[in-house]
Length: 399
Image (cartoon, rainbow, N blue to C red):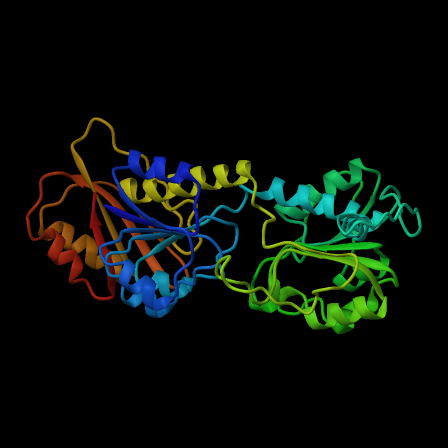
């Protein structure tokens, strides 16, 4: 089994793949479609982070690929529908770097409210700006959190411990933590908060959620942080609000267009603006987070190859099935388009080939069906070919 790891994935992932019996190739940067198509020949497992795009075209040219691991939170860089219909399971790390992102948010809030960064720049240039003008404590300030998931809720806990009043909105009815107050809309959060931080997912519906209209709702002199996805904030409108003084500061870690690696130039309309913190998508870039991500995602990939388990998959029906102990058995995995009648065909083939089924699971989602069956190790040689010839079959594996 061959694995390809891109974008400087933590060495812990290499260790896990070695333990799982895989040989590893790696590259420091991202790859474009043509580079990926060439590199994926014979590759069963692919590990990426946020910059590598897994398109339908790439998947069409990777017949040996069994699974993709996104060693990050988001999976919007992967065409999940195309992956499903090619029988490629996708796994990510939805929780592993939440603490790292939350800590950076708190640090940046303090920097913005204290106006520390312009003084740092001045000091590096030989200046000495020892002034309390416009520098304030965060205690007693109103923090608005848009998106109260794993990261947003941790930000809430840390902010409240520092004496901030927390207000939040989430499209899902989330239980408040501590003394945080749930509001009824994004607009309500924007109107009430002194500082707004955004923690929503990368779905297309969230594009320009923070628009020119939304920015106008914010308090004069408020600060805005975006450590979620680059397309969530209209960055031109944000720059205009900063230039006009309507926003007094901003912190941005994600951008609509980001360099593929350190050799490409980085441009943004936010360059040169005072009290604006620009970081190169490092919200989750701590040793602890990367180690946690590496262990979690690589473990799920190896587990999928070894057992067929999909409990942490973002695009496959989720099945966990324990091994059948004390019984010489093989595990059959059948991935197919989600159409009626496939399971009855499979069971008919089991009967035709004298297969004794020990356990069997079927789960479906919008695109595919996934059958996992443990069977006695003795069956006709024709079984595999018969399963592959079932109508609407995408992929068959025997473990």
